[in-house]
Length: 291
Image (cartoon, rainbow, N blue to C red; front, side, top):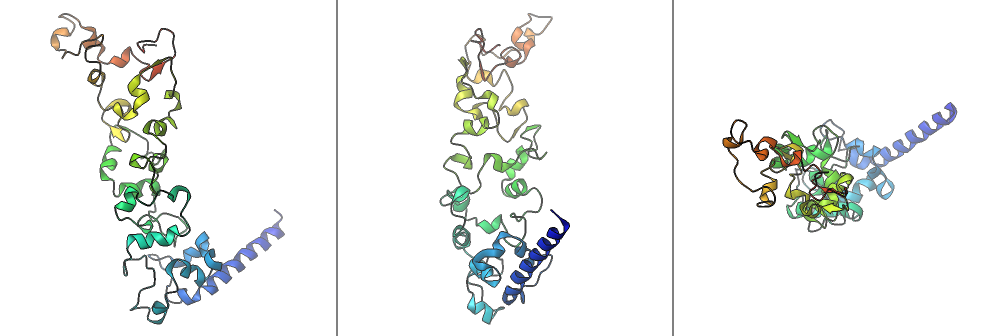
């Protein structure tokens, strides 16, 4: 873009901001900008253009608030989202859902977060350019402030790389509600997992029924002390189902170690050492998931 056009574009943006700011004087005369309450930041967000911008944009969310304008220290706005005049969560969220009713928010009514009396303003703020009220890692820290048990699981040796910033809670969960348990984004738990781990999807010539039925039968999704997010290590995990198939489900002791009568199940230590294709195999000779 030529420098002349860049200059004209900058002047146009400045004029638009000035008009929006001057029109909001009736609100901003009292609601001064500060580090704790960055009111003016809303002029740089899409919410600044509501109802034509200016103070009309304020009233689009807070109502006309005539009594508050007349007695600002004694009367609450029609809709107040701050701690001084707390608003019922249903009313607070209702102001947002007037515009944000579809898309990812379509399942908000009756969702676990709505049932827990949470409001949109508990996670979001309208007066900042960032859509979240949490400054750092909003899609993770914001969730873990409440979900402390998940926070602990995400510190275990085997975990999804949320702390490393490679994935987020919202990659698997829709915090605004879902038609599936645990606010999952996909129709089933397996679909949720396979949206990333597509190499495990199948169909396979030789299926492993638990893998195609429910990933959580063997895996703990948030974190585990066992490798690969497993709920237990082999052979203990495998022998929960394979009690008498091929390898007897017996507690192998020291007598099976070298020097006594060597036992392959003790020395091998893990079923996965041989049955490596545990999710399924397409090999003609892979009936036992060994190849």
